[in-house]
Each structure stands twice: as C-alpha cells, then as structure tokens.
Length: 209
Image (cartoon, rainbow, N blue to C red; front, side, top):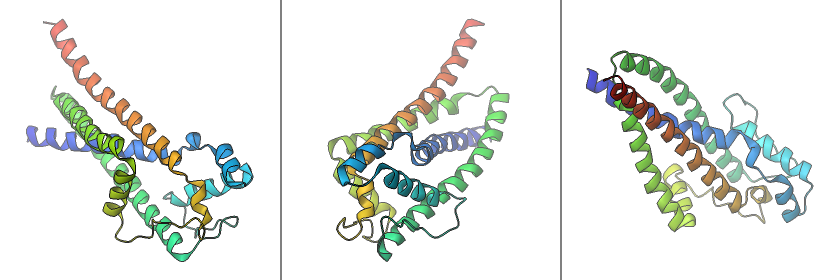
C-alpha cells in the first residue's frame, strides 16, 4: 500500500506541476505584448487587448457565453477550434482541482509515514519530460507545434487563414514561443520545489544522526 501511494503521489505531483504551469501561462496575461502586436497589425492596442481578454475569459471554466470578438469576426471552423481549446482547458481545470485535493491527502499521508521519495520521483520524472518535449521544441518548434495540434485535435481547424480569420493575427508565433519559455520556466520551478523538499528532508535526517 505504501508503494502504491508513493507511485500515485508521484503521478499526481507530476501532473500538478505541468497542469498549474499551463493554466498560469494561459490565464495570467502578463506576457501578452498587446502594444507590439497592435503596431504590427495596424489595430489599436485597446482593440487587441480587449479581443485577447475576451478569448482568455471564454476559455475559462466560469464562462458560459458564446465567443464573440466584434473587431475580429471569425468563421465557424475557427470558432469551433476555440471551443475545442476551451474544452481542453476546462478539463485541465476540473481534473487539476480533483488531483489537487487527492494530492493534499496523499502528501499528508506519506509525510506522516516519513516517506519523501515521491517528491524526488516527481521532480526527476517531470525533468525528464521537460528535456524530451523541450528538446524537441528547441530543435524544431514548428514541427513540435504541429505535432502537438495533431495529438490534441482530430481536425485541421487549427490551421487558421489570417486573410479569412484575422483573429489569428493577435496570436503571432513569437507569442507562443514566449509562452513556451514561460511554461518550461514554471515547470522548472515546480521541479526545484519538489527536489528541494526531498533533499531538505534528507539533509535534516543526516544532520540529526
């Protein structure tokens, strides 16, 4: 039972590190360069930021209204793609909350048993995933971006034509690169917290011997 709890906590911690990082870079708009994008596409910064915030709010679990960006009308296919993204984000929010509750219990239980190994396992597991995914993106960002969309979506609606759907212009590739860097940075912080927790415990044991 102890081993099972350890493995389960490892999986939960790994998921939470990645899930929280994704949700933070998606819903905290501090990295969005609205002024730069506005100057590049010839639209006011206010219009760009309002349209961006409308979409971000739409992706939230708490939004139940249909997506509408008056300044950037979109086709049905593009609107459906944003809906698919919303479904994915909402699943991450709900599953993340459930996993968080379970993780709190598992941490309490394993720490009570003086078993800190899941923090180490989660840290190194996440680190391995970062090297694999991050390395792939570094070598070929466009290829990794395309592969990700093929995995997540069973259609080509994510291939948005800016001439037909100018809404895509407020999401340039450079912005996704920035999000990717921020994502891996946040995941790295999560890894450090987990490994730091484990090695701090080991250091305390060695100090008290």
